[in-house]
Each structure stands twice: as structure tokens, then as C-alpha cells.
Length: 229
Image (cartoon, rainbow, N blue to C red):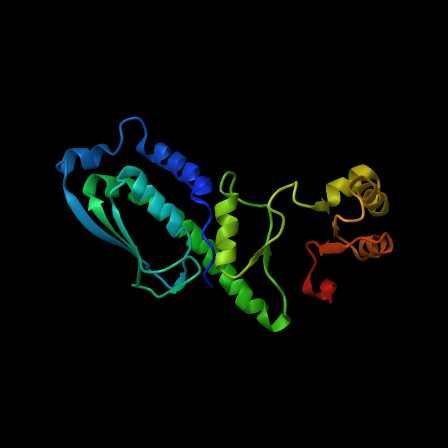
């Protein structure tokens, strides 16, 4: 499934930082030494194995940041399935710039496509059970927007984006508050009746307590299929 691109304003700083990390203080010294200035080249990003594509926006930004006149042609969009040997992106422009951005572009596409592909496999496995695959906040620091975008590209959904998105009472909150019920009651008093409150439960007893306290949603954490049934 294709997904809407993230705003360039959000993605570009992440790509800039990745390029800054890779180019260092002196830039691509190998390309500068080996390739004459002004040399042009044409290249294609080709999938080595089947999967779901994500991260092409990052690749395009990486190439454009080093060569604003670069020509880019997408053969796939984020969320598209790709076969081994298929091109996903074609690029033509200054050779030094393309080779300087190559690894950063590939790193983003490989990582995000891997997330999208793994998500798609889970979504497919969950279909018979009418379950929806959602992702957590356990993301690579600094890359949350991109990784959650990759989950959507794979057909999954996003849970909380950040701590300010919703009330999610977890085991540590419960331990400090002194119990499931009191944690829920305090949360309800603080946020009012219009805000949904979700609680993470580890046992059947906690589930019963949460339901009795009128929680809106529960997250069954680290339970086996047998326990869930």
C-alpha cells in the first residue's frame, strides 16, 4: 500500500545530519581524488531481494542536498512491493555528488524498507485473526518519524507517537502509584472524561481491576497465546 510522504521540513534535517556524519570534515576524499570535477553519471538503486519499499524520500533528499540539479526518477513509491532485480530509483547528475550521497541514501532505504517488509509479513500473518499490527515507541532515537512511516508503508498502524499523545499507564506507573485502580482514578481526574485512558496489564487480576475501574482500553503485555485466549 502506498502512503503519503512526510513533510520535507521534517525529513531534511535528519538526512543533513546523516550526510554530515558520513562526509566528515573533508568530504568524500576518494571520489575527489579519483573522479575529475564535472564528471556526470547515471545510476539505479536496485532491490536485491523481494520486499516492500520505504525511505525513497530520504534518498532523494540526500542526492539533492549534494547536487541541486540532480535528475531523479522514482520507479516505485513507499509502500510498493518490489521484486529482486527491480529498480526503485534512478539518479543522474554529478558523479562526485552521487557517490558522496550514495551510502546515506542506501542506509535510509535499506533500513526503512526492512521495517516495511517485516511489518507487511506480520500484517499478512494477522489477517485470518482480524488483528491490526501497530508499532510502539521503541524506535531508533531521532528516527521515530521515519520508522513509524515505514510501518505504515508496510500496512501497519501507529500507536502513540510520543508521551504527549495519550495516557498509557504502564507497569512502572502502577508500581509507583500503588495499584491499577488508583493509577486509573488519578489519570481520569487529571485529564477528564474526553481523553481515552489505556492501561498495560500483565496478569488476569490486573485486567479485572482495570475493567472494574472503567478504563477505556487495555494492552495485554508479554502474554502467551494461551493466556490471551
